[in-house]
Length: 218
Length: 202
Image (tube, rainbow over all chains, first blue to last red; front, side, top):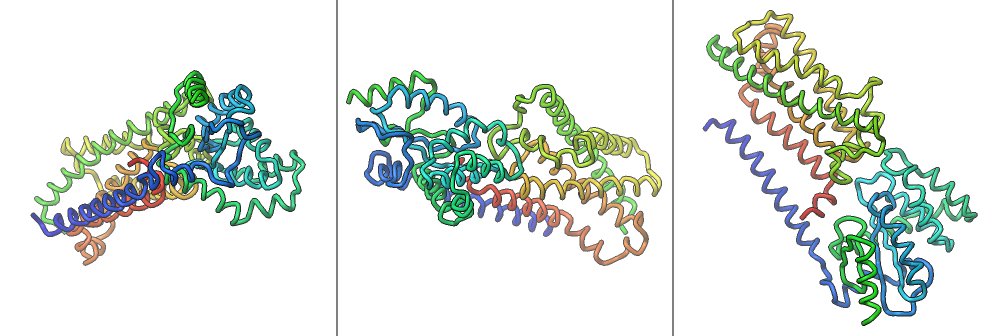
């Protein structure tokens, strides 16, 4: 074999090995640090500062959703979750966690806008607004900061506070903490649901009802 | 300069490269045009290559960068790649083009690589998504540019001084290493840019 061919193969080989090794290392990190069911996992699924949609339910049943405001699957799940919230109002606690995906240009911005609104007590309103208007701003590659700011104006937020929150590291870190929790729990995409600490993959509205009813009956 | 015999052998290899790359590039461009038409007809259409947030032509096709010259970019490929394929076929048929033909080809592939370079940058750092068919185009344009340029540089198409220069001689000897380095760098950038996403796949 010619020297040049050897060098080419060597470069390609080293690249493949290094990449594989890095991926494997990242994959190990990705293993749920907290196996489902453990108290460490439960702590990560719902933090003290995690946002509850509406009122906490009277039962112990908690449905957590890791969501991305720009994800179409989450948009599709939104009316279902709203329906469930009505159906199980007062019984079940619904928690939303941020999980903006890197490929969605405005997802992280949307999460920061919602978190900024949350700091003025308007988490739910902003959360709903984001999903209801997703078609207007989703899948675009231009920053939607101005549009999100307008939503905040519409909600009558203190805009000086909103602007400073939206741009703050604190709010960005708060979103990132949710993402980190999600990654540690093995969340790979959105929406990902946890029902009473167990990962749960519904494929229909009926699945939600069955699982929640079972959990309530326990 | 190479001996006539070796040059003929290398030209033959280049002809095969042009033929295959031309066909592959054409198929990718053609599919992109068809997907674009489907997207125009139905705004809710999800292109076959929109697999997830990162591998997604749908979001790319909607950007301004997808129509830099006022029309969809893949139209350039639909027109340009058949020229490459035909050139390959004609060379294999034994035609020995004049210098001006090689210069024209050089002009075309130079435009191609410049455009691909820009698109890679836009895709990775401005749009933040990858489009699989576009990456097929990147993958064929890079070696085509490299080997056409190398051929023209070493056969005095770009001037006798260039052909006799030490730089060209070294580049010719190390052609495979240069190409490997470029491809590995590109793959490295792609891996780095979407690292979080790749790691969620395991």
